[in-house]
Image (cartoon, rainbow, N blue to C red):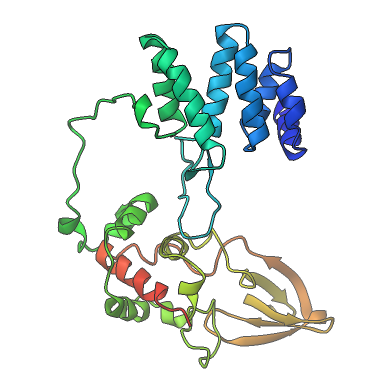
Length: 317
């Protein structure tokens, strides 16, 4: 924990000069850890200069490894793509892109690769795959593909009822990239699945739960699908479920729409409004779960799920 904190602190302090000066010293490991997160030309120049003065194959390999990690950086997140629900084990970046110093790093790495023997070249092949540099000259290590890997015929199963409930959320996300769906069917499903009982599509309608009339301008298809499949994962701001118990053996569950010292105004998911006197409240608790139950889409086919998501994503009022 402490080395990690130290490394992150040095990165935040932009301590490039100190990190470069520590290469080859007793603090070399920490210095290279810091430098692998420093995407600036000074860090790259310092690593290349340190390589020329490095003593020992181990240190040179560590510098090469650090430079290969710096070859790409994480693309700025613009909400147009989705990380998924499982950690990406490939590393070091989910969506890596080259940056200003990438050409210099590539030129240097290629020069060292050309000097290496067959065994030495394997290092560059391994790093090319591990850090996803995509430098063609280094190649990639061939991996055997299991011959018994099952093949899925999406056309055969996309209309099978209940397919969404049987599939993992990752498989549903992959499906959404292949099936566009029909907005008209999605609109019908919005009513048939009961969504219309708790959500409105037009601002002229009586407010209920989260407004869906402009959801397509706020969330991507993948995010909309995730909110349907995992309603408790991300609860819209202002729509946290609150449970209030009051005098007279009364209880209320819904969203708090307004409150002051004298009263609390709540609206349940169907649009009913309640006013509760503050003096009558016995207990008040914010629930960790959404009022939207899980499993509402379990009975749908892939085609139906894609249609519902497409219908909602088209709402951009």
